[in-house]
Image 1 (cartoon, one colour):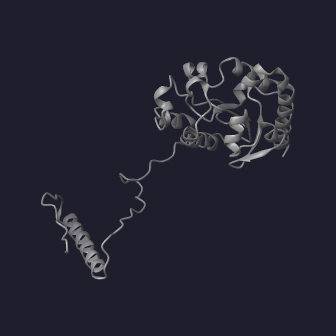
Image 2 (cartoon, helix red, strand yellow; image 1 turned 135 degrees about the vertical axis):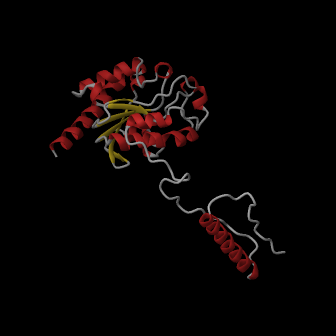
Image 3 (cartoon, one colour; image 1 turned 135 degrees about the horizontal axis):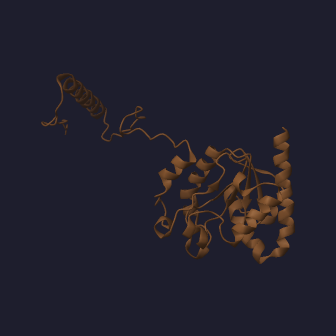
Amino acid sequence: MRRAFLVPTLLRGNASKMDSTLELIQTAQRFVRQQMEIGEREFICRRGPSPAGSPMAEPPAPQTLEAFYESIKDCRKCPLGKLRTRLVFGAGNPDADVMFIGEAPGREEDLQGAPFVGQAGQLLTKIIQAIRLAREEVYIANILKCRPPNNRDPEPEEIAQCEPHLIRQIELIQPKIICALGRIAGQTLLKTSGALGSLRGKVHRYHGVKLIVTYHPAALLRNPQWKRPTWEDMKLLRREYDGMELG
C-alpha cells in the first residue's frame, strides 16, 4: 500500500521557505514511489556532514589545555566519574618537551585534583631533578583522570573512554619525549601485553612521539633495588632529549 507524506498544518515561515519545504517533500515522495515501484520496501536515511555553524555541526576542538580541561571536567563517560572526588587532569608546563604519564590517580591525587602529589610524586620530582630538569619544566598526567576504587588496575572500558583525553593533551602539548611510568602505563600506551622488562631500555613510538618505559615511582618505594635500572632508563631519556636538542 502506498503511503503519502503529510505536510504539517502548523508549518510556519515565509513563502519562499514554504515553497522550499514543499519541494523537498515532493522530491521525497517521488523517490519513495520510484523505489516502491522497483520492489524496495526498506529505506536507509544517511545524514551527511552538517554545514559549519548549523545546530548539528560538531563543536570545534579546544585549542588550549585550559579550554580542554573545561570541556571534560564534568566527564561521566565511565562509572569512575561518579566515584571520584576530583578529576585529575594533569599539571606542568603546557609547552613541555618531556611528558611523564602514569597509570591513574591515587588517594592523595583524587583529593587534591593533581597528579603525583603523594610519596610517589615526591620521588618522581627527585627523578626529574636527577636528569637536570625541573618539575615545572615537564608535564605530568595519567592514562585515567579518575581514581579506580582501592587503586585497582584500570579496566579496558575505562581506558577506552579516557585515553582520547590523553591523546588530545599530547596533541596540545606536543612533547618530544614521553616517559611511561610503570607496567600498565607502558602496556596501555604501546598496546601490548609484554612484560615491563621487555619494554624498558629502548625507544618506542606513541602517536609519533618517542616513548621510554620505566618503573613507576610507587614500585620503587616498595622495591628499592629497581632504582638502578630506573636510573639507566632516565639516562636514556636524557640522551634522547639532548640528541633532539642538538638536532
